[in-house]
Length: 338
Image 1: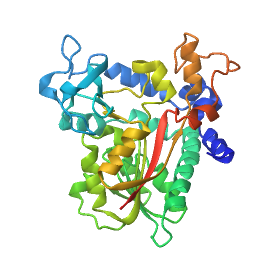
Image 2: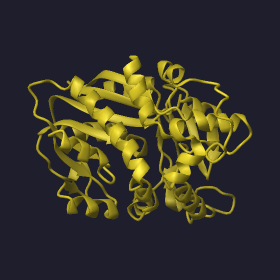
Image 3: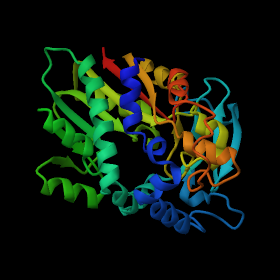
Image 4: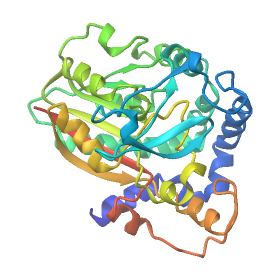
């Protein structure tokens, strides 16, 4: 990792630049988290003992090696959701999970985080982040391939906007009605159905998933579906929460990454690499982004990790140390279709 790359990564690390409290308030994350907390005080899918009701949920096997749940170790419960670690392949996952209809209903009508995406500071940080990701994709894209990208779970379209400005043909898949309407008004081709139902041509040189892969009930099936639309030698780009991230290791279930109603899979670079290799993709690149150093400092100073205001001069860790050792809160990986 070059010093230049470190500077670029630090340039869109809002937690590092502003501090956790200021960044979360100025980007409306505080309002989003309050709304999520309010809705989750007593969700309809939980019973009297804070357990997932069977009529709304079901058990699933390890999403990496398909081992039975009996071969997993319960790490902790949060919000009624059991977070487990597979004893065979070390995959960290949630089981039982909500049924698809329930999960889709929650996400389709979810608008509070869209307000974060529309925030001026967040847009600036996102543009730098998406440009960094696109630059990494371009470095690994074969020169003979046309620049056509499909962004699955494209949200408010920040990434496909950056790609279009860089002369990529940019399309997206997004279920959220608010976001998809917004993007269509801006002239983007956006699909509101599952990839396997779209009957798209094998015409994309890259398929990207920013903060999407962790939500999937069956990540192997998604990669199989991607192969059907990705040209030979084409790329898959993913950004996921890093289970080995220092903020997750320290905060454990207090980390916002652990939200079992939506985040089902938690990867480190080994389990993510295994997932790609199992589906005949060749991993070309991986790194971490985002440090959450200020959240860690707050926690170690007995303050709220996301809204505390600890002394910024107390430097326990550096961004260079975290990224060099793959301890950032997000894991970025690029793999090539064989």
